[in-house]
Length: 115
Length: 111
Image (cartoon, rainbow over all chains, first blue to last red; front, side):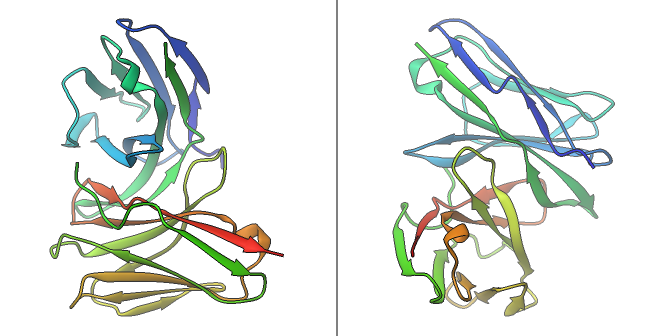
């Protein structure tokens, strides 16, 4: 069974640009969540999608957005990039049991560097 | 932002010894807890989970203990091996679609 796939693995952008990151979940997983990981802040929850709907959102500015497609693949977008957006962006997919997502399976992440 | 656990501490143990990694969570409504392991250059990997109706759960070489009274979670690794060297995160879920991670603990295993 293929794992969670994130593309691209590495990305360098300049301030003010925008970026789109992609995540393909494990087959059969309908919940996809996104996290930002930095050395100083650890793993910060961005948002989670289930059935093409954003179910929960973390404390990030509106420059961070995402979406999920009918095949459960997800993208996240960051507009007007700032230097502080440099981080490892991790995507995780989960099964859903009842009204909650269960254990998350993470991709290897996209390393974004803003210069 | 919201967080579980402490700032990234470091635990150094001798190969073969047992390791205990601790985590404090803040939301008393959390009812599902997970431990993850993250090796350098990789995404976090699920280790073990526990629901709030349990105090203890065992896996292969790992045990998770939950103390809801003091909102404390611990991960015990038996006979620690060099391959256990990684950053360990605890995470909590309050019954929805939001899982909050702690800051992590770095485990060094000395050969």
